[in-house]
Image (tube, rainbow, N blue to C red; front, side):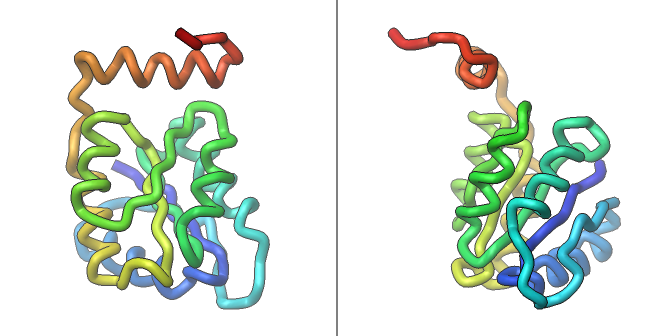
Length: 151
């Protein structure tokens, strides 16, 4: 298991906390930045981590900003990425179990470091259920390919 990790300046501290947690858990990761609290443009860092997941360099991604919203929008522009903002344990579990999300997004002003680490643990350990959910994930891919899936 290898995690793509990234954040902008608004979540630099949260990313660093998650990085320490991953190290303690023995989970391999690649840090795509940012590397300080100096102001940066979040789409660049979200893209780098999401692209690493899409290209199968990393298995899953953890991307943070102040709210988690901006980085999720940026990550979801990368083909093959299903990024979800998670603020509680149920969301972290269900987005993996039912949506086969491959990137979790969190906000430093929304979740504290303890909760973020717990959400990461849930996200990386929860399997996708498949079954009827696979059909729905396939429909997401169809949308990505520009197919009309309207009923």
